[in-house]
Length: 164
Image 1 (cartoon, rainbow, N blue to C red):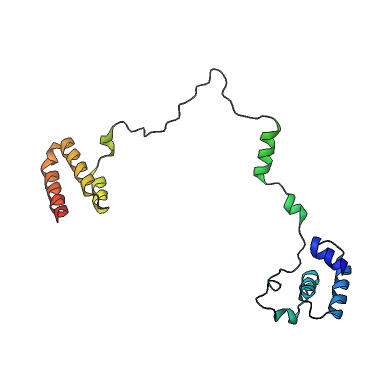
Image 2: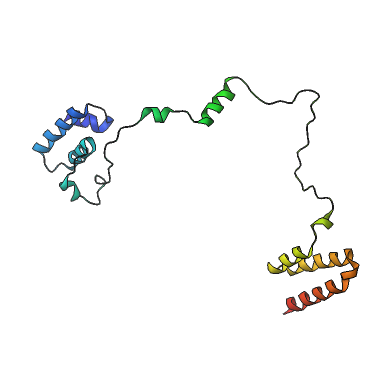
């Protein structure tokens, strides 16, 4: 029994010896479900009595599997790179005389006229943003004086729809 307790506590021991101990335990105490679960774990034997314990944590206990230590200790590419960088302080530092470009955090479009189009106004309308669409059409009418009557009619139609 002490060998069985040591196995339960640590999971260590000779499988053949543990199998013999568990079989001896089950001969003396056939109702001992923990020993039945341990036998299934050690030898992968099917036990019909354990099936009667459905819903128990013992039936959900996985069968014994060997662990591939090499797979657990294998280094990934990221691990290799991290070790390389930590070994000697390898950093990329600009040298004197190198041109360092400034990092931009805002849009590089200075001229908003490039961003204004009838398609953008139509997108705003389809999204239900009628005020933004009206603003776009007003800007377009200022930029394209030959189409100002057309844009004024579109603005009037949008305003008529939004009043209801």
